[in-house]
Structure formats: C-alpha cells, structure tokens
Image (cartoon, rainbow, N blue to C red; front, side, top):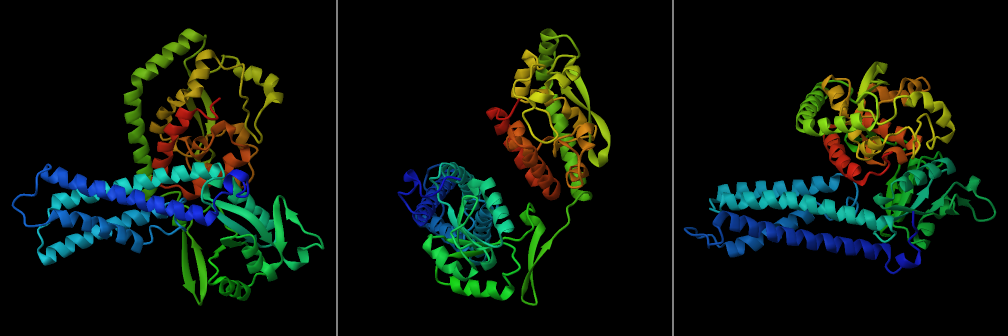
Length: 483
C-alpha cells in the first residue's frame, strides 16, 4: 500500500483529507436534494406556480432540503466510520430519507396541511435514489484515490502478538481501497528485542505499556487490537479510558474473519459484548427463491441471446473442425458430477496436448492456466476475452446443475486433491460467475480464488448475487484476467 509519507501524498494530512471528503459529500448531497426538490415541483406543477393552493412552496422547498440534511446528519450519515466501505452508509442514507418522508406524511395528515403528495413523492423518490447513487460514485472515486495513495485513509496502529499482527496487516492490505493503512505495531514485552524491530515492513513501536504514546507519536487515528492472551478485558478497558479525548478510535479485530455483517450480531451479556455468528444457510425458503430467480433469468437470457448464440456457433464451425459445443465433466453441489456446456474454444485434441504444456502453467494451486495457450483457436480467443464461451452454461442453470452466481465449477481432478476446508465449495451449486470473476478471474492466485469462493459459500445472499451479476458486466468489459 502506498505510504502517506510519499512526496506526492504528504501535502495534506489524513485528517485534512477526511474533512475535505466530508465537505465534498455534504456539498454533493445538498446539490442533489435541491435538484430533487426542484424536479418534484416542476414534475408536479409543470413549471407554473401551484394554482389553487395557499402553500408557499418557495418556503416549503428550501425547508424540505434543510430538514433532509438535518435528518441525514442526525442519523450519522456523515460519520467517518461508515464512509467509504460497507453497506451501512447506503442503509443510513436510505433510512434517513424514508424516516423523514414518513414523518412529513404523518405530520401533514395530523395538521391537515395540503402539501402536494405528488410533489413530496417525486422529490423523495428521486432524492433517495440519487443520494445512494452519488454516494456510490463518490466511494469509487475515493477508492481510486486511495489506490494512488492520495485518498483519505485511516492511519492504523496494530496491537497484538506477532502472528495475529501479521495476519491483520495482510488482511487490511489485501483490500487497500477500504482505507486502513497500517503505520506501526505494538507487541508484548517478551517479544521485544534490545534493538528496534520490524514485522515485515511494519515498524514495531514498543510494548503494550506504550500504546497511547506510540499512537500519538506516529499520528495514528485508529488503534486496532488483535487477539492476544496478554490483552485481558481489564487492560482493554483501561486502554479505552486512556484513548478518551485523544481523537484515536479503538477497534477490536476478532480472530474470526471472512464473515459478512448480516451473520454477526453483538449482544451484551453480563457486561460482555458477545458476538453471535449465525450458521450459513444452505437450504430453506431463500434457497428456493434463489433457484427460481436463477431459472427465470437464465430462460430470459437464453431467449434474448438466441441470435448471438447462432452467430457464435457459425463462427466456430467455420474457424476449425470439431463440435460447436464442448461438454466437460465438472463437480457440482454435494460432489455430484455433471456435464458443463461451453462453446468450444480449443482444438479438438486439446486434452492430448495438455501434458506437453504442464510445465508452462502460470497459476499456482490446482488449476492450469497459461496466458497464450496454443490450443486456443482464433475464434476461441475472442470468445474467452469477452466470456462468450460460457453462455451455453445457461442451459446448466435451467437444468438445476448450476447457479448464475456461485463458486467456480471445479474439475474432478481438482476435487480429488481438495482438503477439508476447500471441499466446502461443494456445499452450494457452482456458478457461471462469482466473486472470483469480478475480482480478477485468471489473474487471481489459487489461494485468493479459494478464499473468495469460501466467502461466498458462507455469506451468500440474493442482494449479493444481484451485485455480483451487475459487477460481472464491468469485469467482462474490462476483460481483465480473461484468457
């Protein structure tokens, strides 16, 4: 991750960048709400002054914008802890807008104020959607700035034993767009040497007795505490007291990772904040709904894509000898084998040539991939570039063998070498697309691909499926990792 101390990034401090980003978000929200209210007025009254009404919309309009901004502020939509990562920012914006709309509707009914319902309905509908879209666009801009080392990011000092510190540093750096930049660490006394240490490229700033001083010295705004036997509940409570008034946030990083927020619930019991983790859902009503949505979308996509499928089939037939459709044995849910359908992109004797190319494998783990595979035909390269070779898998979705979204369907030879953890990929149907595809496809390492597949298995949801489907279009257009 690019350090904040680089020449191009040191012009402004992280806190100045944070304040600048917050001001930009506030200005963006203000402009959007003004336009939404104006749009609601002109859509309802056609640009003419509201006739037959004694409601002064010249006052109601600005008042609505001001009330909306106050509600966003009151429900902490400008809290720096939720900006830039996770879905909580969008939930808060939507909740604030809906609560204000409900409050105005109830107040108007009780007070018998005749504000146009069409005006309010259009304003709130347009404004709520526009706020969420604008926050999304602003977040993408922030992520790109963070990747360049120019965006607002939290300066984090990690506290814990060596193993857990290194694990947390690796996790935070795996997703730099989240904005957690590790700038130092504190470890137990017993691990300190007489000379300054470094854990990788992270400087060790001292022991647990110097946490607050060390965080202040490096201008950290967050102290992230990992699992460590020496950090008892009493010491953590005292650390929280010591950080009061310093402007430094205290964050606890549990050993449990790759679990999505909806499965985690915190409940105070006997003074302890117990974290309840719900079990993954592999059957039930939501699974039935997912299956129905899969088949409905697959049927629609097949019907719409029929002309394209015919053109691709003709191109394959004229380009090289052999069948148009290639059927390959893959492993699905529960370890059951099935034939996955794909447009043929290789020469007919591709399997026989595999042994000669094994030494050129460019991926780690159990998969075989090379960027310039000589077995791929001319049309095949084009199909792979745009992922068009996978369109026949819509038939597998209709047959219930695959899902639109899920882990990559593995080969039987890969499954034969699975260990206990990797085998959890087989608890759900494989997918035509998934987190692996929208995160880099063949450019991903085996370890990262498995991590993403297991994350999906543990935390799948219909909302996440729709998000992945949307991101798939962007991944296909960028053609990153497609070979």
